[in-house]
Image 1 (tube, helix red, strand yellow):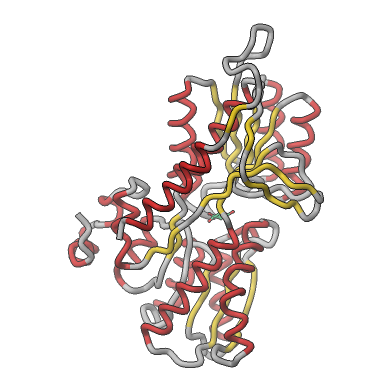
Image 2 (cartoon, rainbow, N blue to C red):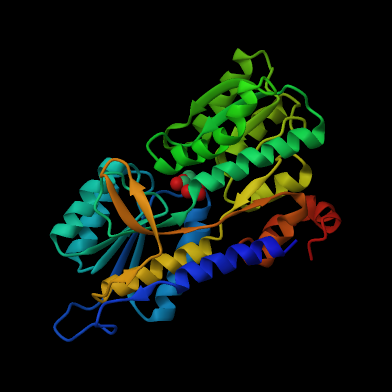
Length: 362
Ligand code: BGC
């Protein structure tokens, strides 16, 4: 069971480890500004990951390298995002890493940084038409494929025939959401075409807003007179909103729901059978790969990456690190805890203690 995670981690390490320095100054030469890295995270409500995982792992990587850093969160406010970036540039960051709120704001910030000679990285979300020197993320189409395959498996296990599938997609301004959808639709569309599955409502949730997601799902359920047999929810926050609506209608546990991010609450929902699966993205590896590049850039170095991301708007290939992810079901919840991503205490609370024991979580 642990093999999956180890494979993911090994791929990550290999990729990150294969970054090779090709600058000639590894310590920051005299006369160069002191390396300092600025990071802007998007919000703390659309997913727990940004504050509980990304910040923690980025901080650890910068501390280990002994480099100055400033990590801030734009709290889903685009004006604030731009202001934070301007302040960071004024305060002398030599590299700026952003997770954009949309490509327009992201581009404005990246262009300004570039004009001022500040190196740039897109972290997790790409800025289409932007100017980042690197992009660090996961293979997000593959993440979506895992969601689609996970849903198919749950439907098969439950013996649900010709199900009506609802799709609750992420923010339309986040290219990751577009890629997740591309991934799950690559699994589901052939089944819609062959009439094995029936396509139900399909809607995006602006800004990944979990509350809006719940409202949209409630409307989907009303429109279909409750005829929804399975739900692709693009991340765990949206899955939780869907599960709350299902619970109000006494449908939780009957209707499989997917997710993504492997947060503690989703792992609990998986143990209780309310959520069918989630996707574990080893954010530690992502953060370490991004920090590695940022540290090099901040010191005036360049590194080669083995992968690239095609920016369809900017028509350019951005040097990239794109990591692998793993589907998590009841049988593998333990792996996420063993990897140190989520604490056992946050999953195995009193209410879930018996389920944790049954699932062999130690
Ligand atoms: C990230 C997901 C996250 C979502 C909402 C996406 O860009 O890849 O991990 O759940 O944003 O914050």
